[in-house]
Image (cartoon, rainbow, N blue to C red; front, side, top):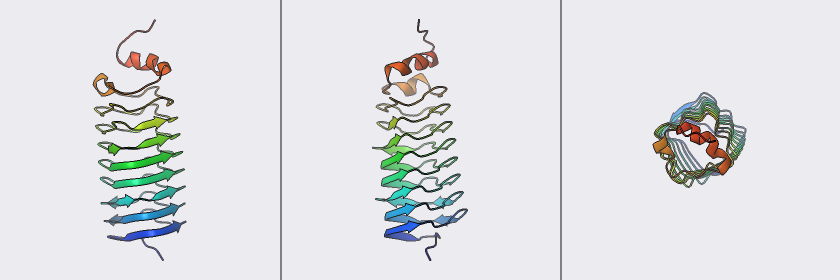
Length: 192
């Protein structure tokens, strides 16, 4: 039986339906692994490393993976409500159809990352490096981007109502014309 424990390594395999909810582990590594409908809810994984992997339909709700490292990984249809991935590093990571409302993604560092059709309402991206990240068709209502780096971040096609972001952070962000009316209000500009 596959167990999630300290310093475990999973390589070149498919894991389906594992129930690892509420586990605590240090140094877990997933390399070229496909996780299908795996329950990782409320896990606390320290020094987690995920490379060349796919997570499909997994439950990650309230998982605490601070300072995790994800590289060339896809997450599709995952439940990520309330996750805490503060300080995580994401390289070439794609999120699609994930439910990540109220996620804590503070100080996240991203390179070649995309969020497509994801629910990120109320997510906290405070001090995150989101340069060149793509948010396409996402719900970002009430999301917090305080002191985030957003140069080249593409928000086109996403819902931005109620986001919290300062004028300095918005410099260089990419938005659609219909999003400008709301953003102008954040900057104290009156559109007439």
